[in-house]
Length: 459
Image 1 (cartoon, rainbow, N blue to C red):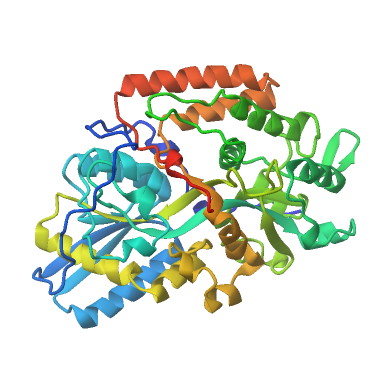
Image 2 (image 1 turned 180 degrees about the horizontal axis):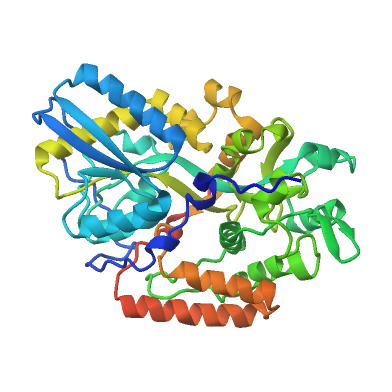
């Protein structure tokens, strides 16, 4: 059996562990405030600036190729403007960008992960998008991206992600199970996971449902809280509600994966290695994780597919769970107005057409940010494992939580270690975690941009 780590892109794309220390504090406002329309800043037409404009990004080969292609097109349309791309390792990109931007340095525009963006927005270093840059009313992300104080938007979205079930077709077929038989209720799903688990004494040889990946635990816990009608934060954004009945039930289910149902073991392979090596029948994680199985484990191409994440009720309400955006390019106020105009013109070419949004959906392996494009024939034809279609089915019932506080990750990591490794009672672990998060919220004094309560399920 080969043991390979999944590429840095999929393992670290949503991590902000390297920038936890970067806390930026500036005034803001509760998300409950009424929204206003963005300021009427016209989208750029002719570019007055001549010269070089730097764009920062982090490593992701497919995105770099797409950006490089656009830069080549730009040379024909704007021969006097050169866009220079600086690509950094993901582990360092967030720290460098946060440090530079808040010091009034760094590039005029950059690719900014959604976990970093809120602190930059709160610090007042982001320039608002022109009101006519995109048709915002057509975009899924608009209600969550508008600043609650000004109504301005400071970012763009390449695609949207939800958690979903990934399964190996041959491993299910061994048990006489077809892909249409993946249950939509948690109770039934756990029974299937038990059926697909293979053991040799106390040793797992095949995990029925592998969960040995921190971020997948974080996302599925949040999803299960939302599925029960719970929220992570108080309405005024000042308190964590993690130790609610919904939070305890969700964490209990994660503990039961290991210690009651025993369909995985914390000493077993990491989630991606186990699944890639076909010693895990299923995993649940966000849609971006399917974007590179062909490259990392080509031998399993066409041998896997996806299904929707189960819910407690078997249906989509009160919510199907969490969604997270694949953000997005931001422009910085430090840049002169004519340089900002170049950046916004580039962003419009990057994401302003249906053709480009379809392209980014396929690159990102997530539904496009425009609901009308979900069934686009090009997406349907190239949707490996039906990953985009599966996410799109649940997307209308998903909650965007807005800010994910940088302080939360280490607290959550410790919480999961307690319940999985030390078998601590979920309520006790959550009481401790909630107390720590509330202390961090109070100490920071920062108003938070939580958007989870803006969610309204479809009629």
